[in-house]
Image (cartoon, one colour):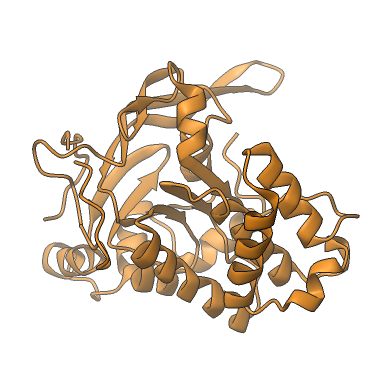
Length: 299
């Protein structure tokens, strides 16, 4: 069912199963959401005149455990700010965010143990190797070094990075390779909620397909909930169980890819495609969006 400007529905943690969890929300009554965002609002003060810009404006979303939930919007729409709010990198001005029932403000450390984030510009110690960066991350989370190394090798091999490359400094690796290392680092902590902020932007086609396939595998085998922002509509169509459209900081539409495409065809006489959905709710074409601002940030 498509929801436009919808309110969240409180919702459950499923019993872990060997079968892939494909629970498309919103969560039914009684089920705890993996991620619950209620009336989230964030303003930034910019410019000499100290004018307040509302980057996220009264956004409410409820995401089921096991979903891949996409957030689409034009540059400056607020989608990356929303991800930063959930990841506790920014503080809420109003509203509430909870991860598996844990409030991000009152229970920040509990939330940090449940989430991890991969951004379009992954941060590393550039002079260190992937192995050294991953070992450092493992130590921060109190993981056993030997077990973490074995798991890192397994994850990186699945992403197409052989063990021989693990000793090369990160700064000598391609952008695609660095992003794969960032994903491996995030997965070392087995996050319940994985926040992917444009993880394939700037990657070559092969690396992009590798990452997309791995995202699907993570969802199906790790009981992970994944929140994905992307500029790639084909990627959103392939990966996302549901999609939210954000425009000028507001949630303007939400539904499965097929629901959104059917809706714009039925109600607006548009071609049933995510390009048409994007244009209908943002007033921009995808080409305009990408060319608008390479730094997509919403401040």
